[in-house]
Structure formats: C-alpha cells, structure tokens
Amino acid sequence: MNTYRAILERIAAALERLAPPHLPIALGSAQCFVWRPASRRLEEVDQETALPLALLKGMETQKAALLANTQAFAAGRPANHALLWGARGTGKSALVKAVAGATAGVKLVEVPAVALSDAPALVEALAASSDRAILFLDDLALEPGDAALRALKPALDGGLAAAGARVLVYATANRRHIVGGARGDAHSDPMAADAEQERLSLSDRFGLWLGFHPLDQAAYLEIVAAFATHFGLKTDPETLRAEALTWAMARGARSGRTAQQFIAARRAAEEASIGVRDARGGSGLRQEAEGI
Image (tube, rainbow, N blue to C red; front, top):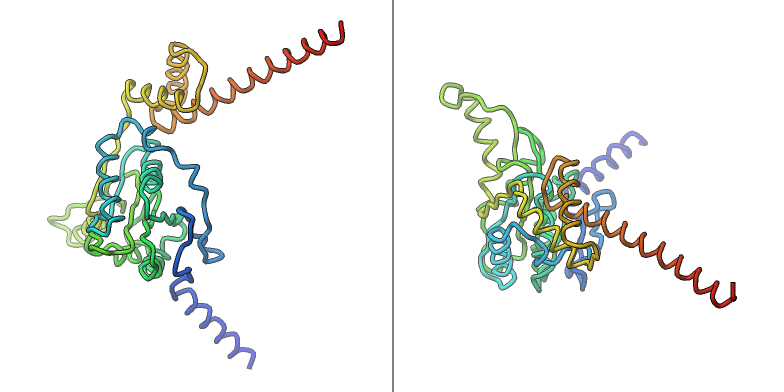
C-alpha cells in the first residue's frame, strides 16, 4: 500500500510540474516581476532600479526600434518578439527594463535562465490575464538538444504577436544565434545540416533583431558624462574623463556597464569626501562654541 501511495504521489507531483503555474488573473499595480521557480510564483520587483531611457547612450537606433515595438504592443497593434544580442555589458538588459518602464500599460515578467522550461506555461497563463506583459528572458545561451530549446519554440511561433495579443517575448543573448555548437559541413553531412537547422531555429523565431557592439571611446565618455550629470557629481570634467579612461583600461572594456561601475565608485568617493569634510567642519564649530 505504501509503495502504491509513493508512486501516486510521484505521479501527482509530475503532473503538477507539467501544469501551468498559478498566476493571478490581474498582475495588480506593480509593473515588474521575477518568476521564482522554487515557489512557483511571481515576485514584485522595484521598478526604480531601471535606468531612465535618456541615460542610455550609444544605442539610439536600438532604443528607437524597441520603444516603437513596445508602444505598438501596448496599443494592441501587432508587435515582434525581440532578440537583443551582442557584446556583454553593452546595455541590452538595461534597455529592455528602461523601455518597459517608459511604456504605460505594459508589465515586465523576467524569467531566470534556470527556469526557461517554465516559459511556455507562463506565456499561457499571462495570455489569460487582462494585462499586457513582456516575458523577459535574460542572457540566453543554449546548446543543441537542450530541453529549454524545445520548450521555448512554441512560445515564439510566428515571431509576431498578433493584434490584441497579451504576451510578447524579449530576450538578450551574447551571440546572435542563441543555440551554440560546432558548425559542420551542412552540404555533405546530413547530421551537420540538422544540427545547423536546430542552431538557427530559435533565433529565427524573433521578428526583431537588435545588435549591440563594443563602444568606441567617444561613446563611452558620453555615457560617463550623462551618468555624472544625472547623479550630480562634483568632479571636474577633465578629471572625470581621465579617471574614466583609466578605469576602462584597467578592466579591458569600454561599455555601459563599465561606465556605470565607474560612476558608482566615483559617487562613493565623493560622498566619503563630503562626509570627511562635514566631520571636520562639525568639529571646528563645536570647538568655536566651546571657546577652545
């Protein structure tokens, strides 16, 4: 009896895993969510962490295209699933979050890489919601035969969300063809041809491709200057420029992420300096008041 019960419990657990995750019909007033596969629920995320669109420099073409696509989706018009691919740290994820934050009437639901197999069920559940949602798949990297590859294809069929659709898929990846693997001679080797078709099949399902490339020095410094103005840094422009270039050289990269990390360090240094000056000034005032 115990053996049969254990088998039935395993079957029930397997069916529960296959069933669509439970989601509320309405996502409420929050705009951003992360899917937590362990608890099988959506967790609200503070949208204030998203950068303003105006701060994203060196990607004007990509910004305009993704914003127009998202606004079409929000208005109930046909829109493309989008793949943002290219060099690491070039602002792909930041752009998705900024565009979602700047578009009224759209929710953003991020799915971590470890939970890609949940994507089809999430698409089904979100499609039944009264809200329009972007399913955000960040940093995709798959190999041929990956179970997540088979799971994602149905969610992207057609490459286009029809008019009135409730779900759109945005994904980021470091390579244009998300599925990796060695490339054989597809002309003479049927197995290599099949592998090549599988390698290309997922990225082909995205109707909008946006490429991101390493920044030149001028674009990198433009981003640094924009961040410095946004956060009200007091460092003079020439010093800021020299320090930003040294920072990028030490890390071997010029990117939006590098610029953001540099600004974070510069803000901390300025705040520490202000704190020291305030402490010294306070000590002097106390000494004057006490007649010392």
